[in-house]
Amino acid sequence: MPTKLSQDQVENLNSDLDSLDLKDASLESKISTEDSINDDVDISLQGQIDVLKNTVLSLAFGNRIDLMADGNNLIVLSPTEFPIPVINTEYNWYFNDALINTTGTNVSSMEEPGMYYVIVTYTTELGTHSISSDLMVYEP
Image (cartoon, rainbow, N blue to C red; front, side, top):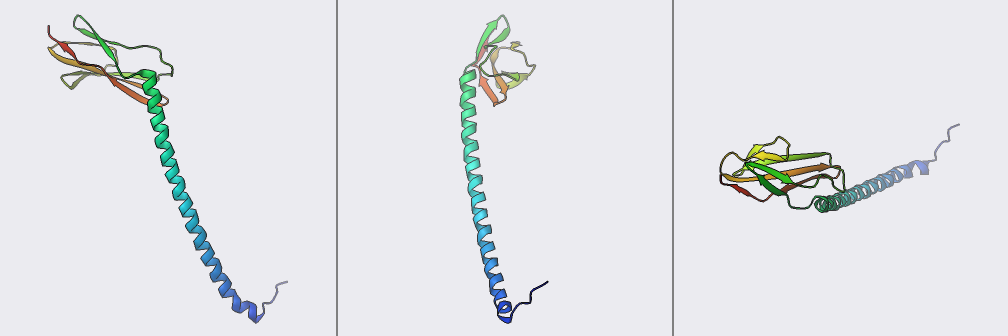
């Protein structure tokens, strides 16, 4: 059965409700501040994780790709096994800084005199790592 409120209880009800509104606003402000701090921490941690991934990839693949000339063919000399699994290897060949071949093979032919090089990109679960070879000058 409902209880009937006294006159004093009814008069104090508005101030009690106002007090709850102030506490609610204060709590929302604290939650917003904590969310902002958590977002900053997440961004900072992700940046550190990305740096670590890049370091691991550099250690696994190195920073140098060697080319060997065999007649008018260029061959990439790189290991075939690495300490982390490779999902895909991409070879992009360049002649005088223009992309000429993306066949995905480690061999390209030199048809004109000029400067050739290759950028090899390894794709792993940690991300991608690209390495550029030194320039190979072709003068038939």
